[in-house]
Image 1 (cartoon, rainbow, N blue to C red):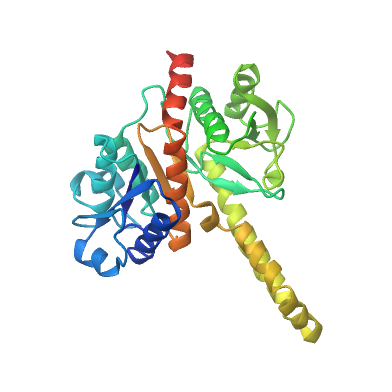
Image 2: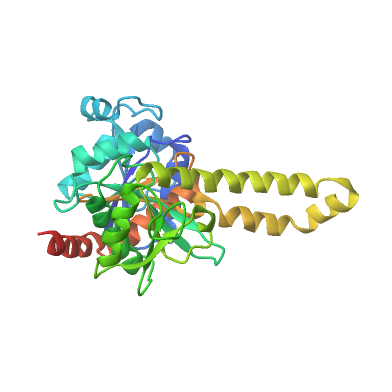
Length: 332
């Protein structure tokens, strides 16, 4: 059985949605066991099915707006997030899923789970939907504002193996997010990374990819520094919401528009679903010695369930062991 630790108290709608998401995961995924970390009386009052679910009492919650995440983790080791991360480090659980504060989760993962020896920097890697109905890995979506080219190569290897093992892509293609497709475009960092990727024997590098092509990219993996990729991710999210609202406004105008709105409700719902982070589930934090999945802070039950499902797939495919073998061989 795959054992998954759940931070039941982290997130905008915790613990209700986390608990419902966990119960949904138990119903849909037969080979997992879940440990819920949170205030025991509160968690048990919301838990209507405890099949393959254990509750561990915790004290305190790392706030979503925490300004000093490192101090928060170190001074609150009995919090739901800290205790969930700790059991992964000890090997009592195979993965942890949390909707809690992003920077606190990254800091906690570094302190309590630990980084892979060969990985000098971790990375947040959400999945971005494409017009083809597939997903593209985007990294680093906020883990490292400043980074060295060689560290991006480590992250690219991790993404390459993840795409192959978890997403089932035979020969993953990787592109570098840049302001133009020409080889000489971008900052010194971008140009150095371009040369490094181009010469690499493992990566299937397709060159630079402009942000306008993010939803229809010529690749399976898009990579940049944490500042740039985070802007790309949030721009996609915001644009999708904005277009959805404008489309609904236009369809609501006049009798024919309102009739069109009624007739197209199903299409609008499918449009919203394709761009919803809830359907993807979460972003794996690359480079750790354990599986840590960051679910969206505003996750509802379905979104959190998808985060758990994603963690289970990563464990089932033994992704960390495969990544470690490749990276340590290349950088020993």
